[in-house]
Length: 205
Image (cartoon, rainbow, N blue to C red):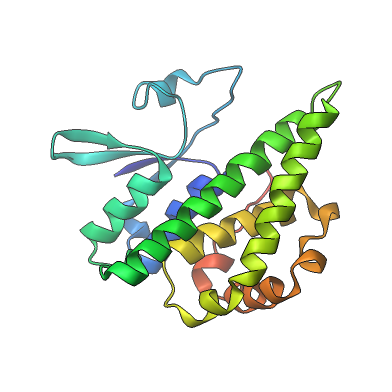
C-alpha cells in the first residue's frame, strides 16, 4: 500500500501511530508528498482529487475503493484489516472513542487555520481571537475529561487528542497549553512515552 505522507502533518501522524500500534508499518510505502493549499500537487491529485494527505492507495480494490482518505477512514481501515482494537465495538466505549477522535480532529482544524492566519502579512485579529477562544475552551473541556481518558482503554480517540496536543507543542510552543490544563498535561506525559507516539513525532527537514 502506498501512503502519501509528510513528517509534519498531524493527520498523517494519526495514521502512522495506528500503523505502529497495529504492527503494519512494513506494509506501507511512504511517499513524501507536499500538500499546499495554494499549489495543488498533481502527484497527490492523481490519487485524491482533493489534493490532501494522508491518502492511502490500496494494493487491491476493497468494496470498490482503490484509494482511501482522510485520516479517519484510513485509520479505521487499517484497524479492521489488521484486527486491531483501536476502534471499540461496544456502544459506550465506541461512541466515546469516536467523539474524542472528532474532538481532536476539530481542534486540529482550528489550530491549522489559526496558524495559517497567523502567518499572513496582515492577520485578522478577530479570527486569531476566535481560534484562541476555541482552543482555550477545548482545553478546559478536556481538563474535565482527563479522568475518563485515564480510565479508558487506548483508542483512536486517545491517538487523535495526542496528535492535537503535540501539534500545539510543535506550532504553538509559546501558547503554553500545559499551564492551562495541568491534569490533561499529566495524562499526556504518561501517554507520550508510548512507543508509537515517540516514533512518529514531527520532524523538520
